[in-house]
Length: 374
Image (tube, rainbow, N blue to C red; front, side, top):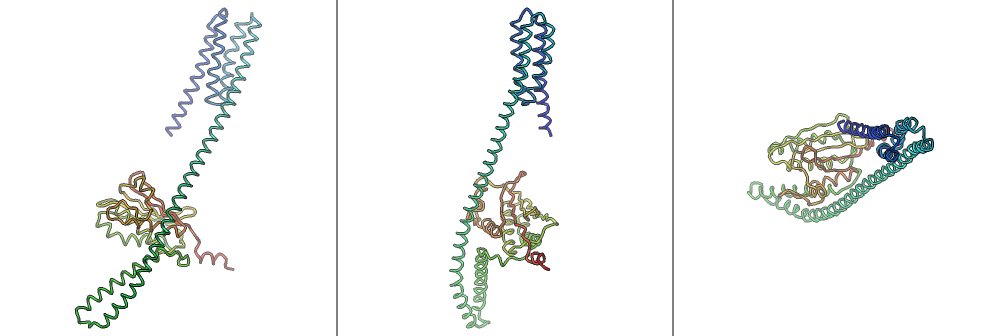
């Protein structure tokens, strides 16, 4: 609003200055005796300056308007003071016509130049936007390629671990059957069995993360996923003095998703936010619906992301934390990408970082069947 008001003031002052210029030149004509014809010739040429300014500032309308005002102020002087010199008066009248021609031509040329400048500006903006999208797409493809390689490597490692783990598990089962329950060694065998089961669970989860089977997706309540994940991290957050707030929209549709994978992605985002605020702060996780997507937004009050971090935050093994592995956000990105969505990172205006997880709204199989039912 202030900018518009300032532009109005500038426009008013500019037009007033042009009118004052015409008025001053006209006064010089009226106050100079006809005997000083050479000065009147100079004053005539001075009229072209405000006409040109009018054309430059306002185009053909400005050029013609100032030219008409100039002609209107100069014509009485010609008719009253030069009636005794018909030849000179004819030249003056021709000069008035030139004022109008000059104003029109100058305005047309200025308008054409302005249109070309506007066209070039729009073209430059479109090219800049296209280049930005191209760079973003290239970075995304490069990141997806890294994540795919990481997933293949992780799957291979998990598979190789699972094979000997099965042999170890079988051997422990045999030892368990050979050990009397009252034997103190039975307790240690139980501990080994429990740890083997935990390792097996970790391996299975790792394999699940790189699995991209769409048939495992089912109708998913995003609000329920958010609330359940917040319940998991709330105690850890409170121990670090971090408050977790939930702001969910009420009009969220049910989406098709791998609920376990989505939980993992949201969990990784929350853990990242908690780790970014050691000691105090608030994390806000909110949801919203757009035309084509359901979004989950995680805002923290940490130090934010440096330009380098913004560029590499989803790269595998990239971390700014002393004890971080650099895999949490890359795994979250991979999960979201497998769902056809997008995960974005940015700095908030008030400080801190914002991660926006976007998932496409895809009608569930039940909805599709209902739509084609007779």
